[in-house]
Image (cartoon, rainbow, N blue to C red; front, side, top):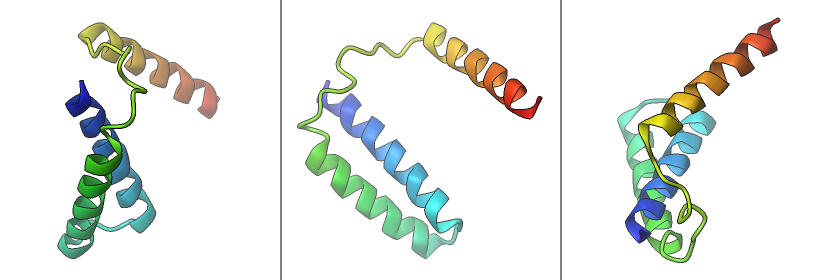
Length: 76
């Protein structure tokens, strides 16, 4: 289960990096990839946030439904 935590932290960190830098240049993405990978490797082993969460198609479906309803009400 440690790999799942590290992957989740990596993806969250890389998305935050891209949003903060607002650029898809190779150099900036490379630095973000290295930083995200190293931070996920260091801190991913010690976290147990996602140990109880099960990734399933049903979870992704309901997340999509929730986001659609949320953005629809946000625009209204």
